[in-house]
Image (cartoon, rainbow, N blue to C red; front, side):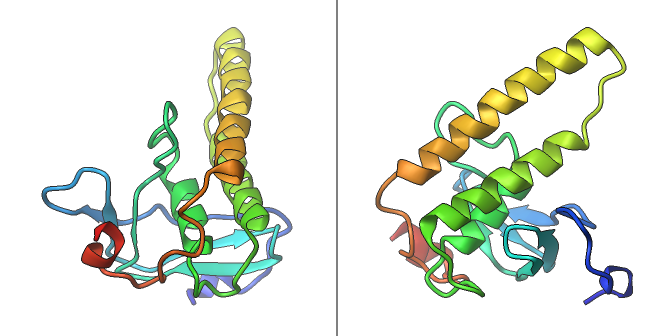
Length: 153
């Protein structure tokens, strides 16, 4: 773990942006080219999506790809061998937490635009989280280090 993340934050904390590569021939999936660390209050601990982790950057219809960091954290915790293994509702809560954190980093100087964006972000966050809570068929179906062929096959 990097030196600057030795202390335990009191809220969600993401020290670095995702470093990804696109998978040729399939615009849905990307692969991490470096470990990606984040602190989640939901679990009260640091989590790491490892280098080589393949995920879909958020596949929620209508809101697809609006928050790749939250999508990565959620996809990590729906894996059968995540550390720790969590129930579906906890993975959804982590997803909401990461979305809220990332949305909070964006600031508009125009107050009207700021409040309009915050309202839309709230609707989008809770809409996406509600969908992942009830969607069937994806939870605990793959391993963290599954290959592209295992994921799509």
